Image (cartoon, rainbow over the protein chains, first blue to last red):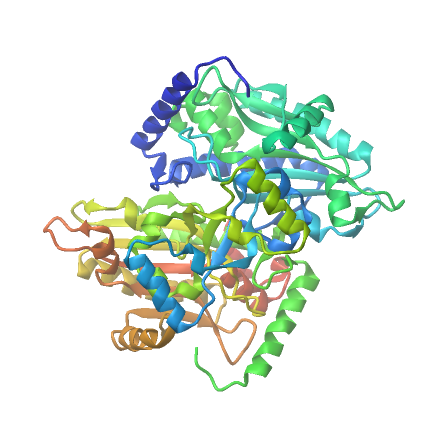
Length: 311
Length: 311
């Protein structure tokens, strides 16, 4: 979000909220900005919100799929993530050498030298978004009526930050629609409204805004302009660490036939499938709830507790 | 497990069970051996078993912590994982260059060349075991009575395999004890018995065996012998893909003061803390249940369903 708040003021807000979360024990520092352990209280809020998402999507009878935080490197290379978000990628490397080479590796570590160049790339990358692992498995012709898929995964973005809401590794819960342009757009628009209603029902002062992905470099600026002009991406934003720079906690995206083309997914009439998704940023939603209602969920307003923990 | 079954027979068993799981849709192929999506049915079995673990550990009032699949690189370097299991590690690398360098990166990808050498190591490694992220946060003096911590995390092991039970990325649920040698040993022995009872209660023909970690190389063979001689590691094994080479689904470990020394964790009397853990391999337990009781949990024996899904 572009705002007029001085960066140093915002940075101070981030650090204050982060310190409060760490002090309360809701977040546990790992030594790396944006990588935290979560307390049982924090995790329970996420579990409750997930059950709420499940209830609110049950009418669509979605297929449920749960992918791990890793994506095949070959599948990754079929996307344009490397061209458009190289700064965010996570590539997993390992040691594949002989016993002698392992001794050289250990000697480098012992001497405080960089040993990472002795590793080789494995067959996997960190998952950039919860829906990425779905598309390679959907190759071919969709059933009539298309598909609606319920996903959750840890995703990785290499962007160390003092903002507790800007984690490098976090969970997205998504409903993805694969089908015709009309089906995809209807899905996006349905969930834009329902997502906003859901956040309001748990007392979050969320607002929808037209948004863009953080495309890299000069070429990226053209893509940002195009994405915004076509209003392909909306976010639901809530004040979290900073009142003046609200945080996107939900994202509603229409991908056109971007993934249909990349992975050869078609509708029964032979056209490339269009896709859309709503993604709930689970850690961010929990952080927004803690900011809005306080650090102890037992003291949250009754209407909020009733939604998150119905009898 | 060392066995006398010919490797090709075992390999055939692995592929048959994997094909059956993929055909049933319980596992979803990613293109990489050992990296799978899970269906809603599979995930639900894991969630039910986790709630069972929670109930069976509730008497100890454990602290609950949930770490992401990433560990600080600095913390990783304070362990001896690089020396003892280099072949299993996962190091996360990203692109940190200029716009011009990003164009060179993309050109390499377009030409089908290896672009991974253009990346640099980030501040994180894949988590090797669910208890690794705990120890750096426990530095200092333990409270009187020590600590009992309830953990769950995705962990990574670079060992591509056709055995569906040998995943590269999977979840461990653990109870870890930090304290005196006696507290650690009591924890390990208590959970060795309780873990076995728990598996029997869900109809799994589990047996305890003395085990060892897959230490690397010639030096590793000495460590294997020492670990087995001291009976530091027990596993609970169940036939999964192969009847003759049962799979470890639970691991009970006494670490002596290995982690206490590495991370400066002490008991109030100033001695290095000892630690022990029980780790439940959640995907493996689900695979063992599917193998033992069939692919449809609704048809599992009533006593098993009663344990996993109590009213």
